Length: 490
Ligand code: SIN
Image (tube, rainbow, N blue to C red; front, side, top):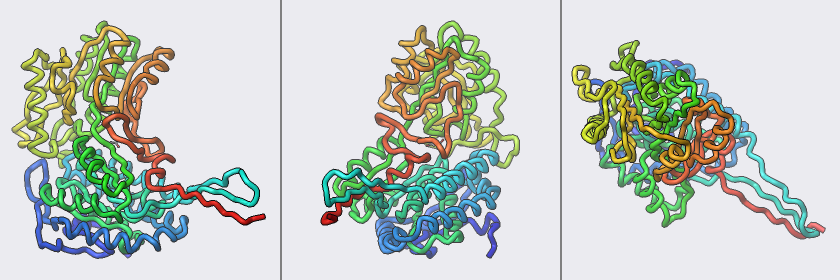
């Protein structure tokens, strides 16, 4: 059996349902394009309601046998899948770059990142314990056991086409759930390739099903899962408005939900910070994936006494970032995902400048490279009246807000309905303790810009959603607790 694949082997153009590659029931297809050039990479099956239903039928049929498989056997399948991902890391990285636009080094890095969740949950599969409850009454034994919730629908975004779906599928399969999935319409090819590798690794037919859908077909396809009582859980990464829609629409069948939603992350630089470290941390966290990351800092608060100095240091570094298509090995930032994304970035920058922001570097489209490129940008004198203070820009733009004291910084950082990631730089141990406690966020980076890890709980508070991915907590959302009360023992 070949285990190392060519790019052409991995480009799949049909849905994967019940262990087979199948066309859409209605025969529809849609184009997947390269954001760097606009060229069509592939024309693929476009799944709607009937395809979503067929996927659920397969997943529901496969559930009892997969649930009853020994955890170590499920773990072995996941370990094989992990090995195949590593073996094919280069080609998967190229596929990510091709359809998503990120530089190859980042694409390959994403493969390793996504694979790390598969390895993590493969190991966790064999460690799902219940409890024997201390005896309360003579003749009765009470215990709590954990069981898979059933069929899980995984709906994933375009910014990390491999890592996001891997970190949803892996815990689901580890605990014995079966999966129906739908990747974002901009980047379905990586997810289809990943499912192909899962099949090669021995995931049985029906256990993992994936449909691709265009923007138009996605709504009826997902609605079918929302209203189908056999789907017991929805796991979603994406925007807050869509997350709220999923919560509302799935209420009729009271499903479990994990929602990893918008961020609008604050990044605070106090005057006692190591400024060189803060600049480097900001570059790592802000410009990862060209700023198209839910945990990217969106608002940078800098204390007044170091404001100008920090702005100069940052702008100098940002001006050196190389923007180019993924095919250029020196690229550090690729194209944005599509025209809508670049338009939003331009709208935010124009709005800020019209309200008094100063452009320290960037501030323009890079049309010579293509329609979807935007220059890495640093804006000084940002204020809370500007759109970029309350909406996620999701692009390579750093607005610098000025603050005077700690209380003002914390108030500004928390003055948002969102609460996914937050970051701050300070060398004062008491301040570190105070600020960590007061920030309203699911994740806090303290003197650190790279916070993501398979071993850590990833997720938000407030309107950034609920549920955690990764870590030992990442299994809970796929499990329900059953209480067993056995009587007549005396
Ligand atoms: C995201 O942008 O939603 C995920 C980023 C990460 O896993 O670090």
